[in-house]
Length: 252
Image 1 (cartoon, rainbow, N blue to C red):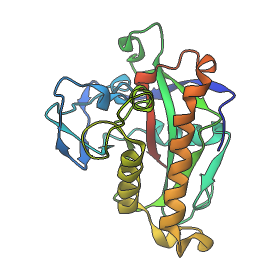
Image 2: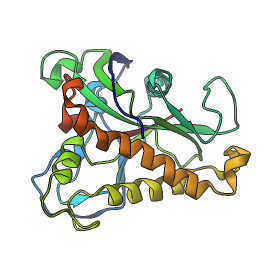
Image 3: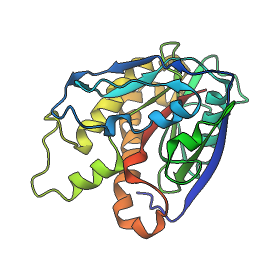
Image 4: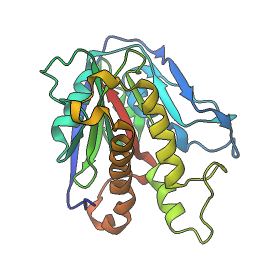
């Protein structure tokens, strides 16, 4: 298993000409929430908010994956390229090079954290014409790349945060998968089941096509394990806010 020894912080700008529009969010794997006051599931919303796309997350329900379908900005694809190029390790189920046409889109899956442009106020990131936000990438958390169909969203995220992962790791009575609390097995199942609905099997590398379910499961495990191992690396994490860190997916 990879071990995080370095955290890279990237300040990125998302250029836009929007005046504040609603984000088109759709949810996969919906189930009733056990805590209507919980807000962790919206941990990645500031990315959309910063670029003038206002997200709305339901309090009554929880979900396996939050999917964003628009409005699209060119910066979304550039964000995927940046996350891929800055990741130290890449797990590729197809050719990951954005310059190579494989006949379909790809998606990069990565564990990351986000921070406001200045101070601790997200309103500072919502700048006119260019949302500015800081992404944190960890060298012990590999990026996963796979080909996807036209059903794939622009970006998506798993609702579980690093803070919830840590709480579960130190719990005396670990949560059982599917009971509302965090368990690594359940998150793994949620992500794999969702990716299975959008993966373009015909565009997978030939060596993987016949056993892609096994390879996909193992690859998602490596991404998750990299995040779970961060509990041993806390002095390195610096400004990484565990309540604003989790697994995201960007199409490119």
